[in-house]
Each structure stands twice: as structure tokens, then as C-alpha cells.
Image (cartoon, rainbow, N blue to C red; front, side):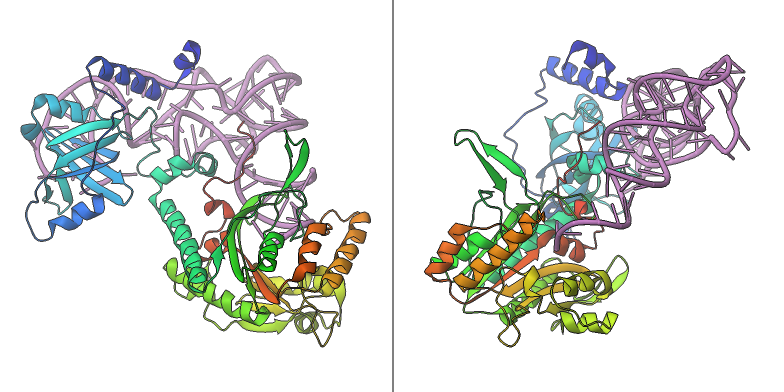
Length: 467
RNA sequence: GCCGGCGUAGCUCAGCUUGGUUAGAGCAGCGGUCUUUUAAACCGAUGGUCCAGGGUUCGAAUCCCUGCGCCGGCACCA
């Protein structure tokens, strides 16, 4: 930062920089290390029980509020688990240390040692016997009462959001627990957790426009993956019978409260299973996720009640379209009618079954009517949460499907599925009969935390360049 | 990409409809008083590229145009 810019800083930040220099001049290391807390705010508070005072404990965290009261300073210390009040007493600390404590700023990270007791008002409090500045903060935190509301700052500077809005941390803790519970369920059932390429020559497995990048030393264009499917199915060819990946995929599309260009997809594939098995698995995954998030199955999203208790309703797409539009349709027309007239009206969890073969180039046709495939999507509150099918294992049919997609591509449909010769080669070796399932993790986390925007469940959502 | 709303102090917000001294408040920060507070209180002095650029006007935070960003809707999509 240049001298000139330094002078342009708001006064509150200039003051902190000057204080930093004063501390250094006084021999204080404002960025110290090697401090080891013995407790968290949570365990320290639990320690007190019915006792009047505990033995000294050592905590570390960020100072959030300071209340000066003559010879006392009250402050709140926030760590990963919560907050605890600190009290510094001039008569205990002595004039010099008391003044040093009072000189700390909101936002500073400090270590403190002292016994836990209860104040007259009943607040569990650490009485500061010694303390150490661990990290000096040079920027003022948002206001203590109104907090940080500006969504632009919340998303661009998530670190500030996480400091100022502890409930935001809970959303991301829940996100982590949901993913852990999903992994746990799949691990338990013998699925192995694998990683497949993000950089791909042919971005297949879904309908979406990809991001394009370039490898310099290979001098080759590569795409970021839009789905996980084709590599996971190659692994079934290789003999892994149950695989899954929780991975980031990238789709070069517009932003909205429900769309971030990079998002997290779970896909899993199970040999000797079909889409009926995938429906069961989907229900199980929703249940363990809700439990992990601490959410009852009878819940609500944005004020609308929704019951996630299995079994979910199952309806054929053609029947739903007939019911809502009075029309008998097949092919892309059926899918279009479903999306336009039916999907938004499905509020409670519904497995929509048997998609038209034209929009499902990777799914197995029904025995009794090859115009349809054994595929379902799970719709809740009008939104898609899962997409699964009995996988197509016939390499001759698969090639024909890719060729049909290639024709659409030639006709200008940029999202038609590309030809993937290596995938066909793998299927020619023999893909066991199998079911596959994809679940959009971000939307599931939104549902189970009642968060209105995908940006509220992605720590660092995509934003335009800061102006 | 299109349509609508919004952008004022570090943070939370007034002011804009109907242009008029030097742009306000609360919190934070700064200087004081205060030993059990918890949105601490009280006194004092501060703090601004009113998103940016252009225009209209004697005069623009305010009206007009363009651009940027954020939010929402549509389109695309999970």
C-alpha cells in the first residue's frame, strides 16, 4: 500500500495502524504465536456447574464487544463454539495491565487466562488474570446491534459475515454434517469414495454449457466437468461395483438464487441395481441428511410446509402431464409440457418416473415401452433434487443415442450430449447392469436449512468483479 | 442478455416525491466521568469522492443520460 493510499484510509483504520506501531514500540508482538487454549467458550462455561469459581482456564478468541465501567471492563470473547464474557478488574490486574486490556480493540484476537465465575446478573464470566494480544485487527467490525446486513459484503467478504453473523456458521456446519452423513451412509453400504477428472476433453454426463480452459504445455483445450457420470460408470466397467463422488461441477450459465456456476453434486453408481433401488437410496439419503442437519422430516421451507417422510409419492411423467394438461404426449413435447405445466405444482416430494428416451441419452429403455426410459427425478416444492436412472449398458444402443445427440448438436443445440468414443469403448468391454443417482447437494442444504438462496449455502459464491 | 428496485460515514439507516445555507442520526472510533455491565449510560470533539462519469440549472445526494455493482423477476439451467 502506498503512502498516499495510507492517508486515504478512514480514520478508524488509521487509528488502528497507529496503535499497532505504538504496541510494537512498546515491545508487544501484535502477531504473536504459540498460545495454547485449554478450553473453548463452551467447555469453559460448562465447567462452572454449581461451583462459585473454577480453577483458571485459558481461552482464545476474538473480542466482540467492549463495555467499560470505571475500574471494570467487560468484553465478549467469541471462538468457534460461541461466546463467553470476560471481566477485567483494575484491582486484580493492576493499573498498567488494566489499561493495556482496556486498550484492546473489538476485533482483536486475544488469549486470556483466569477463573470462571458468575456475575451478579448471572452471566458466566471469565475473570481476566492474564491476557495476551495474539492478533491485532486493523479493521472495524460491523455494528454490534444491527450487525452486517449488506448482502454484497456478506458474500464478497464471507469472513466478516462469519464473524458478525454466527448463525451463518451454523448453516455451513450443517452443510458439512449433511455431506458427512451422506458419505457415512454410502460408505456403510460398501460404496467407495472416488475422485475423477475435473479437467476433461469431452464434458459429458449432462446437458449444460461447459467452461473452457487451456493446458499450456500440452497446448490443448480442456473443459471443466459438468457432471461426474461417465467416469464413474467407467469405474463400474473396471470392476468397482459401488462408487460415489461428491464433487464440484461447473456449468457456464446464468446466476440466480438457485444457480451458482460451480456447485456440488453427489453421484453414485451401484452394479446390479436399478432405478427402483435408487429411489430407495434417495429416500434414505434425504432422511440421514435431515437428521444430520437437525431438521425434522415434517418441516417447512420459506414458510411452506413439506413432509420428507418416505415413501415419497411416485407418478409417471405421462400420467402427471395428462392429469394437469389433459394431453397425451411423448418425446420432447412430453418433457416440455411437464416442465411448463406440472413441475412447479409438485410441492410434496414426488418421484417423477419414466422420462422420454429423447431427453435421456444415458438411461435404459423400459422393456414394455422403449419410448420411455427407467428414469426418475425427485421434485420437492417444484424443484429438482435428484435425477437417477437404470443405466444404459447396451453399447450399440448407447452409440445410437450419442449419434442422435450429435445430430441435435449439428442442428445448433449447444447442450446436446457430445460423442465420447472412450466411454463407448468402456461400455463395449461390458458395463454391469446398474443404477445411478445424482443429487444436487447445494439445493438439499438450502432445503434443510431453510435458506432462500444458493449463495447462502456456498461459502464463496461467484460474484462479478468488485467495482 | 432483457425488465424492475437499490447504491449516502467503518456498520445500520434518514434525507430524494416537490432541487435551495456548510448533508443528518444511532452504533463503532477519539477525549473525558463512572467497579458487576451486557444494544451500558452521560458529556465533548470528530468522521463523507452522497457508486462513477456526463448533462440540465444561478444552484444537484435530489432531475435526465451512460456505465459499474448488488438484489429480484424473466431467459438458460440443477
